[in-house]
Structure formats: structure tokens, C-alpha cells
Length: 87
Image (cartoon, rainbow, N blue to C red):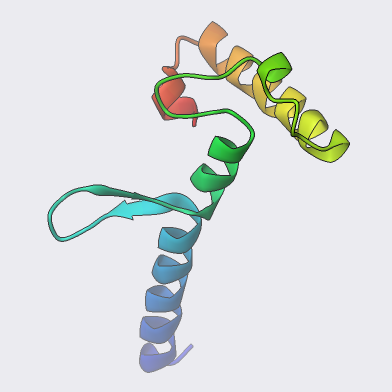
């Protein structure tokens, strides 16, 4: 692949990763990405989780997604991974 195309793809993939995962800005403050904001909407933050029964506004699909994420977090907890790192 041509060098200039590799450079463009690398920059594009990094920008997409920042959009999805988040990034530290020029002041070194965390800017949450789309995935983290979506987790927040279903009651999961880097430092805490809100019980699903306290989220009556969640749709059926969101409740199912939350159950999947809760199971993932539990697996990470068993592996001694912090909630922040799991998120």
C-alpha cells in the first residue's frame, strides 16, 4: 500500500477510535466517546453502576444490553479488573 494512503488510514482510524472510545484533550481532560456515553445512558459509569431497577425508562432492548454489560463487568471483576478499566 502506498505510504500516503497508509498515513491517511492511520489518521482516520485514530479519529474514529477517539469518537468511539474517547480521548484526553489538550488540557489532559478525559472526553468520553460515543460508547462511554451510551453506557452512561444505561446506568454504567467508570466509577459506579446504577441498579437496573432504578432505570424504569430503559427500553426492552436497553435492559437486555444492560444485562450483557453487567455480565461482562462481573467477568472482569472476577479477573480482578477495576470497573473503570472494564468500562
